[in-house]
Every structure is written in C-alpha cells, then in structure tokens.
Image (cartoon, rainbow, N blue to C red):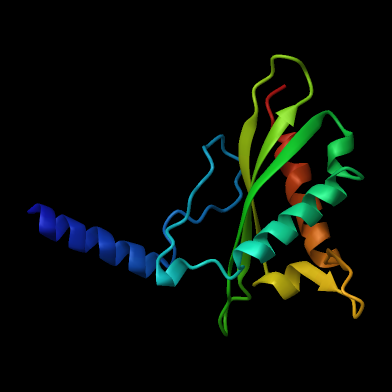
Length: 153
C-alpha cells in the first residue's frame, strides 16, 4: 500500500472512531492526551468555560481529594456533546502528585459519561455565583478515588 492509501485508511479510521485519542479513564500511566481538534472532536467547552470549570474543580479539591496523601494538577477538560443514544462525555486530564519528597507524578484521565458541556458541569445561580454541579462532583469523586487506589505504593 502506498503512503497516500495508508493515509486514507488512517483518516477513515479516525472519522469512524469519532474522536481519536479519546481515553476511557482506565488509569494507565500515560502522558496527557491531546485530542484531535478536528470538527468532529471539537471541545464543547469554550476556552473560558474550560478555565472556569478547571478552577472550580481545583477550588473544591482543597476541601476534598487534595486533603490526603496526594496533590493534584488539573490540566485540561474536554467535553463531547452527545446524541440521541449517547449522553455525551467529558474527559479531565490531571496529574496526581504524591506529597512524599522525590516522588514522581502520575498523569491520569477521568472520563465521565452523561456530561456534555458547561451547563452539565457548572451550576450558575441567578446572581451569577458558579459552583461545580453536584452530579459532576460525585462522578469526579468516584473516578479520582479509583485512580488513587491504583497508584503504586
């Protein structure tokens, strides 16, 4: 097969798979995944929405997950809108950083299904106050708890 045919096959596979590089939150030690920003894989969050949601996640972290043996760096949040059969999903790329001196950090991914964009992640009160949506908070709590349990000891 010539290079042009190989490219055509690879491009077709990317289109058929929806979004190449989408990670299922399995906790394997991989570098942060950067998603294909083609039209098919465009983030449902604007840059400012992603920034706001990441800040809210980081803010709540100080009162929850971050009080344990690990610190966290929340690096990227990508949401894919759903369709009639799929409620969408959001992927949070993070780094778990053990508090022990000289420890390495662990890049991880939390994929939460049923979330599709900013309104599903962030509650905005009539006065403009924003907080992390309770269902999204619970989904992240479950995911992060699993990721921490899988860390090498």
